[in-house]
Length: 358
Image 1 (tube, rainbow, N blue to C red):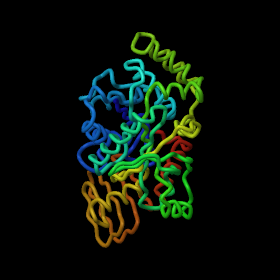
Image 2 (cartoon, rainbow, N blue to C red):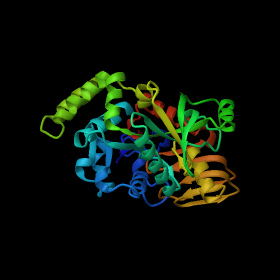
Image 3 (cartoon, rainbow, N blue to C red):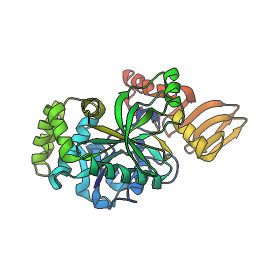
Image 4 (cartoon, rainbow, N blue to C red):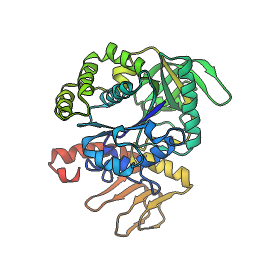
C-alpha cells in the first residue's frame, strides 16, 4: 500500500500566515514541526519513505523537498499549478499505477491536525482490510462530529456492512454540502452523519476505471502527461495539458457519481484547520485554556482569544472571542466567529491590487 500527501493547496483562510508564497501546510501552527511534517511523521508509523508520495505544485516543490528530505525525489508528483482535487488525485493515481498496477493507496491532506496518530493508523489499517474484501469500492474515512460545524461537508451513512472490536464500515447514502447551523445541530444529534475529512482509500486500477467513466477528458490529458513524465518535453506537455483540464473537485467529479462507496467512522482528534476560529477551538480543547498564544504576548482579562505574535510584543486587554495574527508585513484582527470571512478579505486584496500581501 502507498500513501499520498496532497500539498498543492493554498489555505487562504489562514491569512496572513498562509500566503501564496508559503501556504499553511509549510508552517508550524502548533508545535515545532510544520503541518506537512506532522502528516509525514504520522504516516511513517505505517509506511516507509519510499511508499509515501507528495503532490505539490511547481512553486512549492523546493519547500516541500526541504521539509521532507526523507521522501525520495522521484516521489514528489509536481503539478504546474493547482487545478482542483480531481486533477491532483488522478495525476498521482496514474503515476503510481504505472509503477505498480492496481496498487492500494490512501490519499490524505497535508494541512490537517490529528491528535491521536495511533488511532489514525488503526483506522487506515481497517480501511485497507475492508478494501481487500470490497476491491471495487472507494473507502472514505469519516470523522464523528463533536460540534455543529457549518464550515465542513458531511457524509450521510446508510446500512452497516461489517465491523470488528474497534471499527465499523457503512454504505454511503449521500454527500451533504456545508449546512446552516440548525441543520448542523440536527446532524450532530443523528448517528447518520460524519464530517468529510477528504481521506480516500482505493485501488488505482479501479480509480482509473472511474475516471474513464466519469472524467474521460481528464483521464486522456493525464495519460498524455504521464507518458512523457520525466523526460525533457514533460514540462511543456504538462503545462499545455493542465490548461485544458476541467477544474472540478474529486468529490463532485468522482465520489458523488459512483455508487460503490463505503465509509469508516473514526475519532482521532481531527481538525481541518480551515479557519482561525476552528484553530482556536482545537487549541482551547487541547490546552484547556481560554487564551491561546504563540510568541511575545501579554494578556489581561481576555476570554477565548488566539494570538500569534511575530517579533514585537502584542498586549491585549479585555478581548473576547477574538483572533490576532501578526506577521512582518500584515496583521489580522477579527472576531473568531467571523474568521471564515478571511477568504473574502483575500478577494478584496486582489480587487484592490494589493498583491504583495497575498
